[in-house]
Length: 207
Image (cartoon, rainbow, N blue to C red; front, side, top):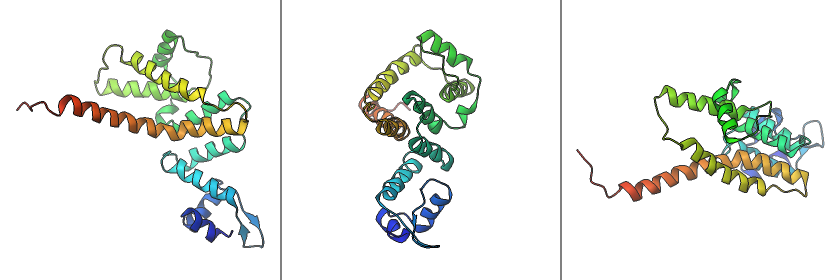
């Protein structure tokens, strides 16, 4: 199919497809002339993936490119893919390199500190700093409670990693991390709304 048909099939404007081509997100089509190229179903699937990463996944062009490169050229270890995924979903707060409070927490919990690259550690450190700056005090044991709940979620996710196909493992780990993150946040907010309704909706307002 030509680029115009690719656009119609995926409902992505041709100008946007050309932008993705220039940015290296979408592979080039098969050249049939100096100005024409043919595209196939792999390009359709790739475009839908790009839109998912940039849309629901909330990634920047740079982050999406990193994720796609990891899918195309995966590291040897599936564990290393988690680092790629963590980099993708970590915002600017994950750039800081000093995170003593988080490392102390991890040591207390018995979690490994062996990973030299830990953007998520910096992200949590900055998040805790923001709580301090806002003078928002977490209830006693709150972090331990969050750890337990997130450990259960992570365990279920890691248990689902395919082990019979490296390519499938790459897609599962990277995309599962990037695209499930917004799902978890949305479910948290929905649960808060439901619990709040049950607890407070019938209480009289005090003036």
